[in-house]
Image (cartoon, rainbow, N blue to C red; front, side, top):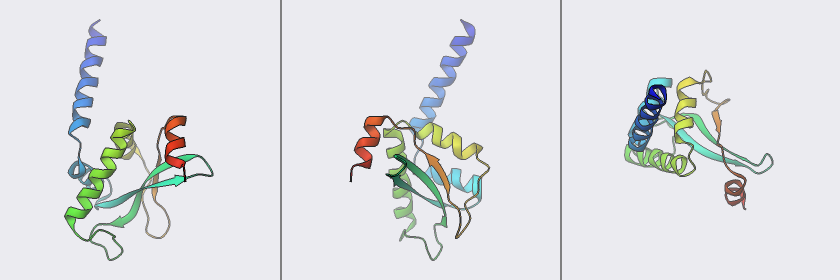
Length: 128
């Protein structure tokens, strides 16, 4: 019973932390992991019937960055957070970022995270 109570408390604390996770926190996570405020975007793959959340090798402030201002960048990250939260993928995405050994490299690699979605969710998202 004691072990179950501890596990329950840890889960509640984790949920509370994820409820407070926002665009600023995501930017800080990217900075601490890779040393740059990298961009993130979703990619639908209809051929494989999946959706990826990719960490791109483009940092805010670089010439190729699509965000006009820091506010625009942070609002974009907040939108990413809200979508991940809506599909119950935020916590596993954050865990993935914290534990991955992959590194986004300019001109070659992004760091892809495959969203865990139900068949119904995939159907709605992949509808063209």
